[in-house]
Length: 436
Image 1 (tube, rainbow, N blue to C red):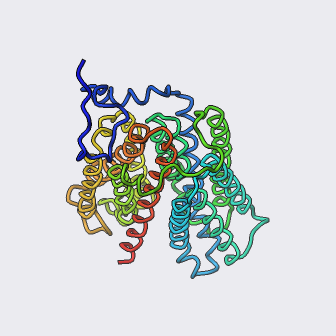
Image 2 (image 1 turned 135 degrees about the vertical axis):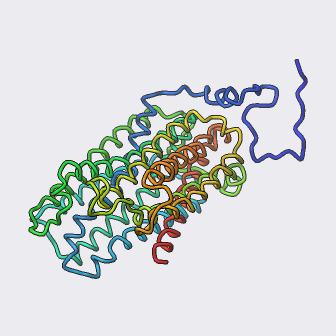
Image 3 (image 1 turned 30 degrees about the vertical axis):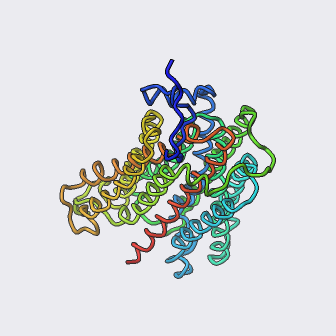
């Protein structure tokens, strides 16, 4: 048997593997699996985390999907009609960031299970109140309704900040690399389905879809009610999934508030490269909505079929991005080699900046494209979404390998914080670019 070698004092301790040098296999995949085998994989657990991830973005997606309804409700006030979407985005982003900073500054270890449970309940409450607000007999003035919806956006952002932090901490505590990508796959699907429904509506009912509801027939109200009803159903399903997972949680979980075993500085040192990779991935991806809203088909509107009209073409681009994101999240589960090369993970995430000049080569505001719609939809949108899901998922799933068991919840929460920080930073850059 070979003798054990003492590690060099100069060795980089940022990534101390949980497996000692003599125990490592030459195959990186086996090295990772040796740690994961401490806790057996459960497909049922995976599905429950997927449902929780779906709920974490579904309510916010339905609020964005209800924009036509809000347009009708706010048309009596031109100022609100012009700025309500910007207010929603800014309040959502800054509230999420504030919650993340507050959670990160806490001196004691929080109860992540309590945070996650509270956030999931908040999603159900918000969706229920918004659903009731679509009823015609509860109609209120534009000013009051704007304040009400803004409050719902803030509560949703608080719940999102709590759940993004707590869900990944909760998943990390199970000691499997697959559960964090399961959450992100659910979030990706929450972005994919609404746009898919919008395209299906445009194709199935083109006259009803492209004509404004000037006569106030109530069609918009009915569709929006169903949007928020679906959010209620998804929220209740996530609560059932959460309750099931709590019953199966490993015994080392800390349901009560205790003293933190680690601090953010040490965690940032251990997870420097994956944290930077996750931040850059979200930051770069969050700029894309600025381009998506301005890029239209190269086919002239008067000659375009339904799918190439801007009202359907833009949702189509969003769908392809989200399909790529969804597939990327699935691929991440099978990309265990990236766990062994965290610096490569950061380099690959940073290299996604190349997509920004690719966007500039597309048909922005009708200025023309270098290669037509296929270049924008497949090469740019689909691959941009694919790399996002792949690299962001890979950066989140290595916590059980990189961090000791007692610190996994804390590390998962820290990685959730980098996700939110990247999302907010990218959203702010996107809003700034949109005003330029």
